[in-house]
Image 1 (cartoon, rainbow, N blue to C red):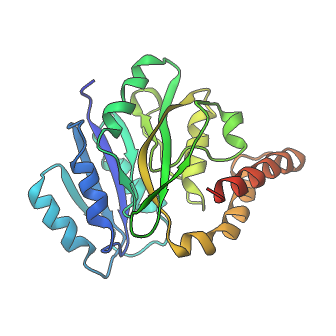
Image 2 (cartoon, rainbow, N blue to C red; image 1 turned 60 degrees about the vertical axis):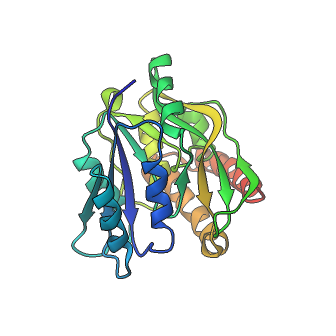
Image 3 (cartoon, one colour; image 1 turned 30 degrees about the vertical axis):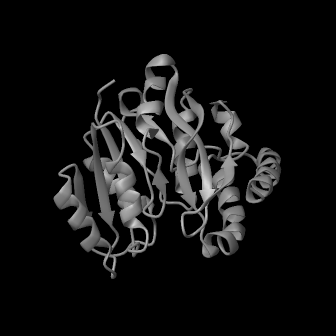
Amino acid sequence: MSELVSVIMPVHNAEKFIEDAIRSVMQQTYRNWELLVVDDASTDSSMVIVDRLASEDSRIKHVSNDAPTGYPATPRNLAVNMARGRFIAFLDSDDMWLPDKLERQLPLFDKYAKVAVVFSNYEKVNEYGERAARVVVAPRRVSYRRLLLGNVIGNVTGIYDTKRVGKVYFPQVRHEDYAMWLSILKRGYLAYNLGEVTALYRVSFNSVSSRKLHLLSWQWKIYRNVEKLNFFTSVYYYANYAVRAFIKSLI
């Protein structure tokens, strides 16, 4: 396979980690990619770092929002609109890919006709990027109903195929990546897990302590306001989600 992959990276004040993130794309063994870095009005040196790396590699593109949005959906959608690749992948500015991520994942699209999303397991690392075998393992095949039980598609690992589903945008809600994956699988497509670790997800103190309670609220709103599930169906999926989220938090 030699199709172009568009990699989308929103950025807001990420000077501490962004070089690691970008270099993990530059080091991919699969070479046909473009990296769209969308600055959400950073006030630190993030874009200085991006521009320096872009001078080393013309596949890196720097795009800017006029004002900070507070929602990663907006810069991501700007990049989706600009993307030229058949495949669209996502990498946040504090996470990292392993070098063979794209090379290992992309062949699965041709192997399975109903697969519109390919993802993988990922490993949690601490704020310093240190690994300790904290691997989040997801099911190998995921349908819409399975995904309603909880988001098993780590956004740092997910890729979707525009040839099958067109360009898919993030809704302006919290937990927007989950809502976006649901919108794809709701059409009857499947997501397939490579079954290996291809990415490193950086866990900071803030992400551990402050986002968990918010996620519970965001999850309920997706069931009721986005997916339009009735109350009792929402309770069923929400209970499953809460248990699975607790287990994942222990990894």
